[in-house]
Image 1 (cartoon, rainbow, N blue to C red):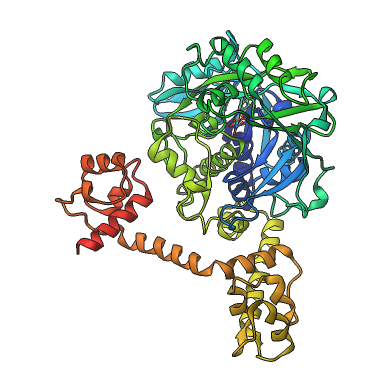
Image 2: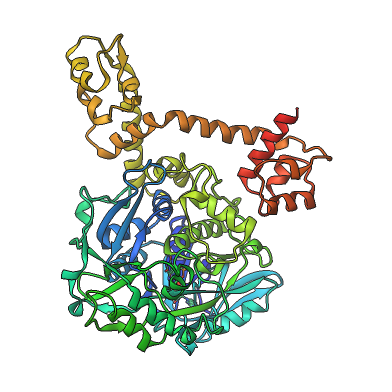
Amino acid sequence: MDYPDRFDVIVIGGGHAGTEAALAAARMGCQTLLLSHNIETLGQMSCNPAIGGIGKSHLVKEIDALGGAMALATDQGGIQFRTLNSRKGPAVRATRAQADRVRYKAAIRYILENQPNLSIFAQSADDLIVEGDTVRGVLTQGGIRFMAETVVLCTGTFLGGVIHIGMQHHSGGRSGDPAANALAARLREQPLRVARLKTGTPPRLDARTVDFSKLAEQPGDTPRPVMSYMGRREMHPDQVSCFIAHTNERTHDIIRANLDRSPMYSGVIESTGPRYCPSIEDKIHRFADKQSHQIFIEPEGLDTHELYPNGISTSLPFDVQLDVVRSIEGLERTHIVRPGYAIEYDFFDPRDLKHSLETKVIHNLWFAGQINGTTGYEEAAAQGLLAGLNAARRVKGQEAWWPRRDEAYIGVMVDDLIRMGTQEPYRMFTSRAEYRLLLREDNADLRLTETGRQLGLVDDQRYDAFQQKRDAIETERKRLDHVWIQPGSDAARGLADRVGALSREHRLSDLLRRPELTYDDIAPLAEGAPEDPLVREQVQIQAKYQGYIDRQSEEIEKLRRHESTRLPEELEYDRIDGLSSEIRQKLKAARPETLAEAGRIPGVTPAAISMLLIHLKKRS
Ligand code: FAD
């Protein structure tokens, strides 16, 4: 049958990409349908119950700054919060939350069900309705035709998914869920480059059978960080500890003795897995000299005994999984609740997408999430938001929007994917961002919320809170610029043990730049310091890093100014320092006429453009 209502945007898949895509389109006023296999699995975490971490929390905070749901759901579902890299610089600091799987999912579902303009329908999408080169709608397994102006595909690991446990394998999208085979077959008929990737997950353990006295406890941080700019600690449920266990020589012997029963090592699985989240058999093989690997034993929730042993993802047969687990100190009597497994799935080469994530070959069709070769909830959610936003902009007759590499990690990720594609599951790292001093997790709101408001993604409540914070930061910066500390004053004497006696008067802002002093030292020297810890933190970071931040901003400006700079025809790329041989090859083959043209060659990075610029300067 034809469904009687026509939608502006249909989003297929209610995982992390799909939920943010649907919410973004609906927030922008588009009539949106979220079509997913099962309402109970909306927002489900397929693998580890954790959100954030290095590079990833930057994405979560950017999604949040643009009005998305992930950070707020994390604050409502998070059962342990930590600040990673807290002793390092603010650019690489990251927030990580262990999440209660059920509470997180419930929070996402609540947000979805209460979003105006958003309808949900639970059924498999089996086919796209395509006329000429334009998508017109979706056909479900039950024969319902939903028509729409735009479609966003967020099908995760489900397209042609095959699950492996030892030598046994079967079709599945993830454990307990069906694969999307009809849709996969249909998509393979399109002129899009398609390949296979794989990922895996560890067996889950019953906490009642673990001897915690033999494991090291790892509590959350105090003070406890919060994920969302709109979040508060009071939203967090009860907090729990994680624990640390270790593999040993026996564990490694068991794995080595059974590698021939591993689908990865016997040639059954040929596709590439996530390099930075390897299976335990991969780790034993690749780091053969290491005698022990750390395993984080993470609770899956407050109302369950299930534990997630982070670090022993495996597709070995179940009997080997049990031996591996029981060889570990503290887990000698442990019961496995669910076996670990690997999954292979179809992904589409993201070089066939535009920066807006619309496909180049089918008009009005967007791809977001694991389908584009990425791994991780955060990477998926960030793409979902961007795709949903751009589908809505198309409906409204507006130009596509995406952030630049110097504006957001979302911009870095999309630019990396679209220019270079990926041969292995792509995950975010701070090292991927050349302007990471500007793209900190603490300032994602200052970078993006104003734009998000103009795009129609940010509601009044968030915008008001943002404006108050931005104004408070500005007021405090001005106060620090206007208050002078006189030599010999009480205030100066109070600082003398750290900076010595002042020889002349100093502004508070100058004193704050000194490495020996923190904001907490100088703020109380005059009346009027703000209470809000986030405002105080922001003022401190901006003051301490101003020099570096200015330099990075100048670099970006310089690159923009030089985009039309001509590249001489006789330029010898082999003689340019610092270029990788891959980039040299590409430049030699393409012979771009300007720096801007060079920058558009897939795989030529902004860092390479910077080196070209330096070389041209030296030549002139
Ligand atoms: P998903 O979260 O997979 O959501 C897809 C959604 O689409 C589901 O709700 C599904 O029901 C729905 N759907 C699919 N096809 C259809 C259809 N035809 N019709 C209707 N609905 C459909 N990430 C890491 O960062 N580290 C890891 O170690 C890791 N391990 C993983 C291990 C396993 C076994 C799996 C399955 C995933 C793992 N991931 C890991 C990846 C992580 O789960 C994904 O990156 C993330 O969930 C992707 O989000 P997504 O929205 O793209 O897709």
